[in-house]
Amino acid sequence: MKSIARVLRLQRQEDAENGYNAMVAAYNIDLKVKPEGVKKIHSILARTNPKLQTFKPETIIDDSLIQKILASGY
Image (tube, rainbow, N blue to C red; front, side, top):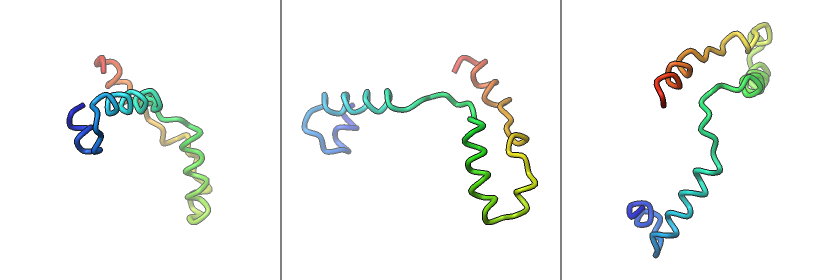
């Protein structure tokens, strides 16, 4: 916390700790790929590359690496 407070130029270490805890609570640590996110990116990219319109975005989702990480106890 001392490093965070120093880098952010905070006067009190408690402010750094409160900010850190707020950021941890705000972000999700779920590593799994969300199909709706892949579809959204696909739709954006397909606008500029027509070849992508024949491609199914669901076919590229492979969560085997994530499953290994979760199985390891991460």
